[in-house]
Length: 189
Ligand code: 5GP
Ligand code: MG
Ligand code: MG
Image 1 (spheres, helix red, strand yellow):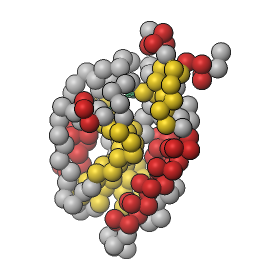
Image 2 (image 1 turned 30 degrees about the horizontal axis):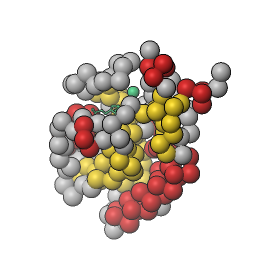
Image 3 (image 1 turned 135 degrees about the vertical axis):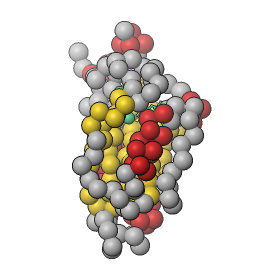
């Protein structure tokens, strides 16, 4: 059976994604160009879900930058957040006084990002921006505050469905789909 057969509906195709990623990268490049002669921008990918988005967007940002990853868990294997996120693998980069962009797959309740922003702020980051591939604003429970003159970038507004593909999983599967879609109900079990 092909993996595609598990998908009920595609929300964003590979071409939709590529076009939007280029736009976001151009915006980030413009916004940080004046800061980067003194110190490179630090891009922090939130593992695992953001890995494809991260790989795509860093290649389109035309500025000196460094990359790092942070791992955070709250979901387990289901489709509902279990609340308190936990950082299980931290960055190695010294972010003190630096401009940091957190690259996340999807903002849902906002718990994960508010935890990560507070964490980077406690490490002394000069600014913390967020670049989220998808945003589900109707599901927000926590309104996170960016740090310094940090900015919010978001790829697409996502309807209130559990989506998979382009890095995002259900029970660790479907991350390798090159597009974003909704699973057929029979595959959630
Ligand atoms: P939050 O802490 O904002 O509630 O949840 C953020 C995390 O939950 C995201 O980074 C993502 O990993 C996961 N998540 C939220 N909505 C979805 C979804 O529709 N599909 C998948 N695969 N993960 C999701
Ligand atoms: Mg995530
Ligand atoms: Mg997940």
